[in-house]
Length: 429
Length: 61
Image (cartoon, rainbow over the protein chains, first blue to last red):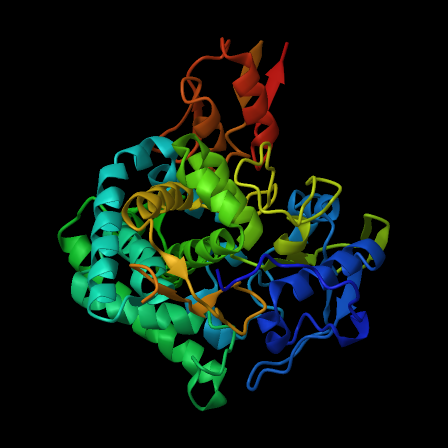
């Protein structure tokens, strides 16, 4: 095994820690978690300036919330800590990006709840039970292709491109009714939208233009599909978006476009990173891999532990609507809070031995899908199902999968992502 | 034990449906519907009420 279990460094200098610096987020996880541990223990509402991004005005900065209890207190009071000023960016969203990215994730009730309810039924355990067979078919096909790729390539595969990316892409595109020919474009634009500005994914160091172009291309796809579905309804999410009414009215063009983009992007990236970094964690903890592989009754807790461990979405933002106090911190209206789910998910007040990856951890009240409040992950049940099917199928069909590393990390504070993860099938040659 | 749901607070997350599928169902309007207001499986229902993200479920003994 070329990848060792992480050993947290004893010392970390908080003066060198800038959570706004995307390059800080490619540092080794053990180092990042050591820093988050110290922030949680010593500066639980640490203040950081917003990063400079060309074309996007910076605001006053934000507090990094790292304690589980504080994160839950903020998340569960949406009237005091709103999402409508922007939940997925440190900066307030510029007007020109709102068209594509001002979705219900950055919206408050009552409008948020009304729009969410259009699709909530589709994502319930009962409804997803019906799609289980199609998820299994997709996973089996992707793993067979990964095997074929390895055989044609001296045993070498990329876990991200060959396993982790295609599974959620195909599942969500099936649910949305996106045709096969449009899927490579969806993947490429989704990568740009959640790039966090990683220069490898952004042309000419111009993120504003890249985000706008990606948004426009996705909106154009939505326009085309919306026209088709209005004329010829189908049993898919796109039909639900264009035909549903809220308060007696159809959704606005902006609401449909941003919701369409949200579902495709969120459905893609988060599950992908849980698969790739779940496999990375299993390679670092071989006893846990052997234990889980041998016992399908661990599929449920194993997946929850992967989501806790990876925390695919690092943070969401809330903005105070009034003055008040939370966790001993006095705040004024307009203050921004970033809820660091990855830090809360390793809070020793809640999780015994939090730096240990334990596929049998139970209970596991992680906040990898968000904490209490109306914005709890819409796709949580879908993600769980995809992950349970995927890990079990990998244990059964690719028992010889060996992560060789190193992981190529996405330079983003927002998404805990891998761009590539080298691996082999068929043993060492 | 009695369980009620506040359909204004509910966003149809389905957490309750996962824990107690015989008691809760998210209906076509995207909001929870209580199938048994005096449920047998009390432990699952208590967990559902505790884990509901919007605290939309109320349990009374």
